[in-house]
Image (tube, one colour):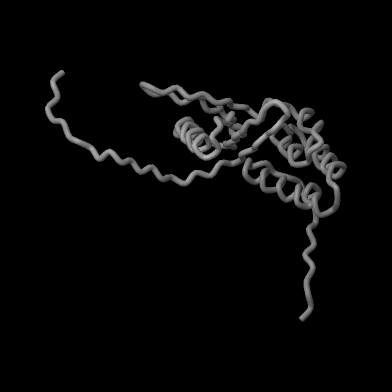
Length: 178
């Protein structure tokens, strides 16, 4: 087809967009180093696959290393498709449906912050008690336990999971007399 109009576009492209990854990790071993990028999703976002491509480009530009990317799906319904595709681009990433991992997998962790993710696999009140007890065992001190439990409360609110009053620790705030 014959063009009706041809226009010259400016050659300089300015692409400035502030991106904030949910979690970026640099992992180094004797033999290699890698960057892991995690996005946490609890709702459907049609633009997520394209955002993952933008994150990849930004991470690679900043750290000179291609990241391995993961979407941690906590939402209801189907998780997002693990790719962005248009006429000339195919970008793939991994999607992990956190609800399907099972509570045992979270409880076996030695990291209390990973244990709290078990809330997505909790099916009954007893499961929540197991999470609470495991956090108590793993936390180094009372302050860390309170911090982990605060994160558990935030996560439960985000995922709309109701916690019983016994699950929530009493957090005392010292008051100075003036």
